[in-house]
Length: 88
Image (tube, rainbow, N blue to C red; front, top):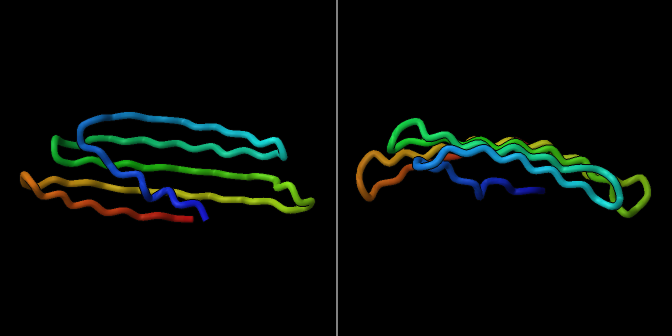
Protein backbone atom coordinates (compact mmCIF):
# COMPACT_ATOMS: atom_id res chain seq x y z
CA UNK A 1 0.00 0.00 0.00
CA UNK A 2 1.25 3.46 -0.87
CA UNK A 3 -0.06 6.29 1.26
CA UNK A 4 -0.14 9.63 -0.54
CA UNK A 5 -2.45 11.29 1.98
CA UNK A 6 0.35 13.26 3.63
CA UNK A 7 -0.10 15.93 0.96
CA UNK A 8 -2.13 18.93 2.14
CA UNK A 9 -3.63 21.73 0.11
CA UNK A 10 -2.00 25.13 0.44
CA UNK A 11 -3.75 28.46 0.18
CA UNK A 12 -0.64 30.54 -0.55
CA UNK A 13 1.07 28.94 -3.55
CA UNK A 14 0.17 27.47 -6.93
CA UNK A 15 2.47 24.71 -8.20
CA UNK A 16 2.61 21.61 -10.36
CA UNK A 17 5.19 18.83 -10.11
CA UNK A 18 5.71 15.74 -12.25
CA UNK A 19 7.84 12.84 -10.99
CA UNK A 20 9.16 9.87 -12.93
CA UNK A 21 11.18 6.97 -11.57
CA UNK A 22 12.40 3.68 -13.04
CA UNK A 23 13.92 0.60 -11.42
CA UNK A 24 16.69 -1.85 -12.27
CA UNK A 25 14.24 -4.77 -12.32
CA UNK A 26 11.93 -2.95 -14.74
CA UNK A 27 8.87 -0.81 -14.46
CA UNK A 28 8.13 2.81 -13.65
CA UNK A 29 6.44 5.18 -11.22
CA UNK A 30 4.94 8.44 -12.45
CA UNK A 31 3.20 11.07 -10.38
CA UNK A 32 1.47 14.39 -10.87
CA UNK A 33 0.99 16.82 -7.97
CA UNK A 34 -0.96 20.07 -8.47
CA UNK A 35 -1.92 22.68 -5.87
CA UNK A 36 -4.34 25.50 -6.70
CA UNK A 37 -5.33 28.35 -4.37
CA UNK A 38 -8.92 29.37 -5.08
CA UNK A 39 -9.01 32.33 -2.68
CA UNK A 40 -6.83 33.80 0.08
CA UNK A 41 -8.33 31.31 2.51
CA UNK A 42 -9.17 28.32 0.26
CA UNK A 43 -6.99 25.86 -1.66
CA UNK A 44 -7.30 22.47 -3.37
CA UNK A 45 -4.69 19.92 -4.32
CA UNK A 46 -4.77 16.73 -6.32
CA UNK A 47 -2.18 14.00 -6.68
CA UNK A 48 -2.22 11.21 -9.25
CA UNK A 49 0.11 8.21 -9.04
CA UNK A 50 0.72 5.24 -11.33
CA UNK A 51 3.23 2.56 -10.39
CA UNK A 52 4.03 -0.55 -12.40
CA UNK A 53 7.12 -2.33 -11.04
CA UNK A 54 8.56 -5.74 -11.78
CA UNK A 55 10.06 -7.30 -8.66
CA UNK A 56 13.25 -9.24 -8.13
CA UNK A 57 11.28 -12.50 -7.97
CA UNK A 58 10.27 -13.93 -11.34
CA UNK A 59 6.70 -13.29 -12.44
CA UNK A 60 5.93 -10.87 -9.60
CA UNK A 61 4.75 -7.35 -10.13
CA UNK A 62 3.43 -4.34 -8.23
CA UNK A 63 0.70 -2.31 -9.92
CA UNK A 64 -0.74 0.75 -8.14
CA UNK A 65 -3.14 3.46 -9.29
CA UNK A 66 -3.87 6.17 -6.71
CA UNK A 67 -5.61 9.52 -6.69
CA UNK A 68 -5.88 12.06 -3.88
CA UNK A 69 -8.01 15.17 -3.65
CA UNK A 70 -7.59 17.44 -0.64
CA UNK A 71 -8.87 20.89 0.31
CA UNK A 72 -8.11 23.43 3.01
CA UNK A 73 -10.31 26.30 4.14
CA UNK A 74 -9.43 28.95 6.70
CA UNK A 75 -12.73 30.70 7.45
CA UNK A 76 -11.38 32.65 10.47
CA UNK A 77 -7.99 33.46 11.92
CA UNK A 78 -6.82 30.49 13.96
CA UNK A 79 -9.34 28.10 12.34
CA UNK A 80 -8.40 25.61 9.62
CA UNK A 81 -10.70 22.97 8.15
CA UNK A 82 -9.31 20.38 5.77
CA UNK A 83 -10.44 17.14 4.27
CA UNK A 84 -9.29 14.59 1.76
CA UNK A 85 -10.52 11.77 -0.45
CA UNK A 86 -8.26 9.00 -1.65
CA UNK A 87 -8.79 6.34 -4.29
CA UNK A 88 -6.58 3.31 -4.79
